[in-house]
Image (cartoon, rainbow over all chains, first blue to last red):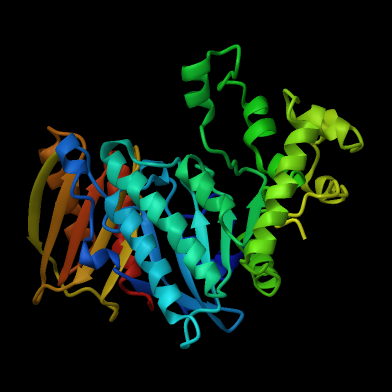
Length: 308
Length: 104
């Protein structure tokens, strides 16, 4: 048995939502809210002749990270692409509201969102869209109450649609190579605008445009890690202490940063054009170099997510 | 979609003290199993919800063989299946019964 991988050594991308939570938090500290035995399942999927999941594809609860109390939510990207349905969204919303209500009264030090989602579940899209709006609102409330919300993205579904917007609302964002973060997914763009606009089968193009190396270099993520659960754990521990305050000055600075970014790179058609303009070395190779070589690149100035 | 139950009697009660365990993910070609120690004596029960209709006889054969091999007395298994093959079902059932013998 001794040669088995320990939970934190496993690869984030390959792990299930439950394995990620187990390896991310201090050993055996996780306590689940609304666990699978309560069978809080989607009331909608059966109408479409679809089988559900006992946890509706999301694990929520509390635990300790480096001995600090945290709340955590983990989406299971392999169940319906980690998509938001009514119950799925309600579990995350409830967790965020509980964190907000606990602020200053022994509540969590931070909320960790382990996002792995294609966006809204089409079979219950209205409920899913409403949930995402309420979640975005709740994240703002949690951050206003002084509790950092960390987004961790490294799964096969990435963070798309409302999940991409939720990611962008986090205080700090940790990513690993395989992840993608966007709003409209490649196939959606191709369907609406045509294959000349965006070829969703061109995987290299998809990762250059939606991939997290691009996000990291342009300030859509704060920390790029190699991809073990332990890497995500160490990054989360380090970032909790450095979350920006959620106040008008922060938002104004971020708005200005984004306006400047659009002004500077808005006419670029592909990521390497951005890297060339930004003066990065060998811009056409950035998508394919090793993680070590990528991490050695100096990020362009102004790439900090909250513009400080 | 098809739902049914398979009941059986194991040779002995399942070991360990864990109250519940969950394993697997309901995705294409896979399944999730929730196990709960809620039944008396050597009774065992599997609740199956599967995306694929028409294979009940095979499910029953696979599950009865699992009852024979694993002695999961006292355990109730609830399955959400996304079209897993019989060998995958056997593997997950064995895995879920084994989890109940480990520490939570």
